[in-house]
Image (spheres, rainbow, N blue to C red):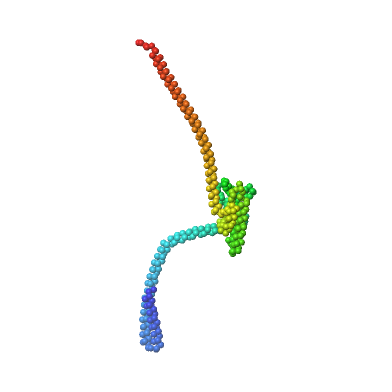
Length: 358
């Protein structure tokens, strides 16, 4: 609504109210009839003015309402057009985002399943490692896996029984020297876990003592059981299937490492064992190539003997061909002589024939 029209309406109403109040006071003062008539006339005039003002205000309001209606219709039409244009695009975008969200949720579900499976596997591994017998089997399986990945099948033997009746986890077949190498898996996990999980120095010291006792006992057992003169190499390998245990023994128990050297038993973690086996594979390859070279040399010697015999036979054959050529030349000379004599005989016989006279 226009502010000027509102102001006019308010002023008209205020004027009308003041006039009524004035008339009331005039009536109370008991004026004469003439004044009363004048008041009535003034009231009629005011009523007419108020009616005109009200009509003007009503007309202005109607026009303002019409203008507002047209503007509202135009705004609604524009809004409808915009919605018709943008709504399909927004719907497509929303559908695309929902599709991407479903894909992400699927990826999250798969990741949760993998995490659950990994948790179950870790729990199973913890159960395995908590059992001494299962822990030993775990070390043997890891040892077999590493050896199978590097060496050929004919260069090792698992659970091999030696001449003293002892059975070693793996015997690597090597030419002498050094000879066959014994590898035995040991896993002193309980003492190591006690050492790393200890909360004070006393517990760490006690756990380290137990770890030293276990490690040195394994070293002595391997030295006594698996180093046999004339059957195996004069060294053996103690395989530790955990790099952390191997590193811990090297750092905290250097005296056990020295004992192993004196007993000719060398510790190896998974990484060191793989390095050792790659070296063994190179040695076996060189030994195989050396055997092949000897075989080739033997065959070459035999072939040279055959070449000598072939040379003798070729020389004899050449002599035979030379003699045959000489015989052929003699035959050719005799043939020429016979031909020449035959021609002479033909000439003699023709000259002796009597001439014929007509």
